Image (cartoon, rainbow, N blue to C red; front, side, top):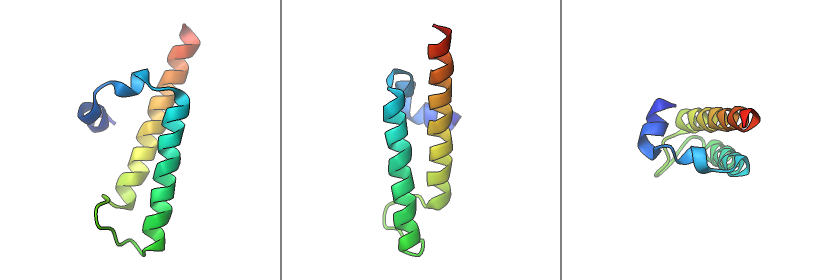
Length: 71
């Protein structure tokens, strides 16, 4: 999560929860595509990276929900 935050900065703090959800859904579709291709990819980082990305974006969404609840 810290690596993702380092790569993209704090952009997630300005994103809507629905945008983070959309990114997670895109990752799910990418995972399905990789599985359909028996794990072969030309550009993607692979299944594990996509699963970690989904966890990271879900954590960002949870943090946003907590922050919004405190305001």
